Image 1: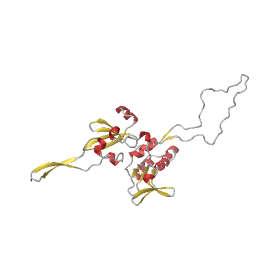
Image 2: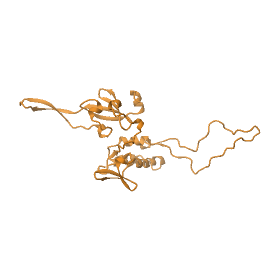
Image 3: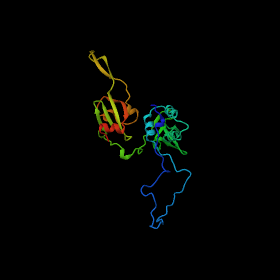
Image 4: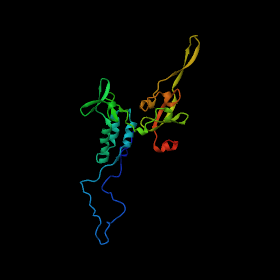
Length: 250
């Protein structure tokens, strides 16, 4: 996924240095020209502006690239960063805050360095990490990271909506609705002889990859997750607010 990274972080209007109270434009007086209340001007500092950024697009960008080699993801981000743009340079700072690359394997478990202490990645506060052996960008499924008010129910039927014969919407553990396209499990027919030496045909299931499981969106078995047998997900797309409105989702 390649996109102009200047669009990933959106700079909102800067806070400070422009605040003005609405209403009266002059001080009250006692009728004889004497002010009832003296206005004390605020103390001036070297700078009263600060960056006010919307980091949600950056987080969603990283989520959409989970499963890719981190070197390629980081290269895509850095490729579109202008060195003369202060806001865009902040992208790299926030990326380092989101993605923990200082990982290693200890006793078969991925750990991260927090201060001077090695901590299992699943117990750390990092949102994403790079696997020390594969170099793949991973999502840290740490309990409690999600907003509990948006945490889906345990019942898969309560967070599943049928949008068509082979299309569903799912509310996954990240608190977002996803558009899922299903297909029947791939099979091929082969001719064999049975115990009575008669020629018969049988279906053999071919290997496949379910994108929902590959992207760690759910651990539920396919039959329970999709409410049907012999089906798997071939496409998973996060629904926008406009998409949800079209199909009547919250």
